[in-house]
Picture 1: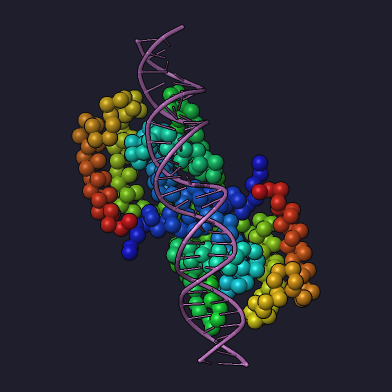
Picture 2: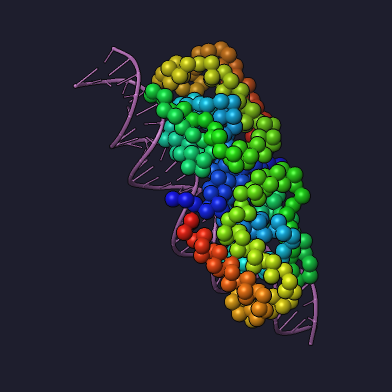
Length: 149
Length: 149
DNA sequence: ATCATATTTCGTGAGTTTCCGAAATGACGA
DNA sequence: TCGTCATTTCGGAAACTCACGAAATATGAT
């Protein structure tokens, strides 16, 4: 079960080397999140997000903690992971998509999980004015970054 | 042609996230090398090694320089690449496979490229006593690390 | 000029990744 | 107890990765 240093390093970089997983890591920088919150932001099937999170966990980059119906993920305290991610944050903060995500998240964090997860609150149908404003702004940012894909 | 920061970061980590490419980067830490030298160490087809090097170049991790019949690769001066690799070296130096590689390389660097590349000098048929000793030692190291795959 | 050879490019097959929706799991509340 | 709902696991389809050998390219030696 103990992998070589080489294999562990490869596993860690493979985990980071995917746009959705990198966005998830960036989101977690602002504090722990549950799966349903991340699902809203990245707009993929819940099962897909769950699988990405499993891979990040296997790579030692995040840890999970059950909290009632929800599962909360946070960045792992792993030192070599932290050093690695530190090298990533500086560049990444400028990215339009990452900025858009954190804009959405800052409003999303103010909504209770019960409220967020209740069936009617799919993205775009959320009533809260601040949140919808954040979503519009995020869409603009994303669109601006679209050219540079 | 300008990629977003997110895409470039992903590309870089994908490039690092492969055992052979990681070994190549580790090898280059000791100075520039030509393709034929790396091919001998990693024991893959020349075309395969060449493709790995192209990917590392596209990711901005290495640069190439033509030198007669040979093509020399070295680590790029790219600052964000350097910061990333710095986080990797510390862990990686202990890995048995990486140690084995650098042991072989330290002897391989003493052999001229002409001598190395002449057809009879496939790995294992090299006459130089120090080099063969290094290869035996490297094989032992690799075998010790085999358990931890 | 011609040959040998180091490297890259190309086509191909095997294996892996990524995404989805459906089914399974596990926890809360009625 | 039963249904509801967040999450995970599973099966499968499309896309991508990795390794190879053959062909193309380019350089140095004869």
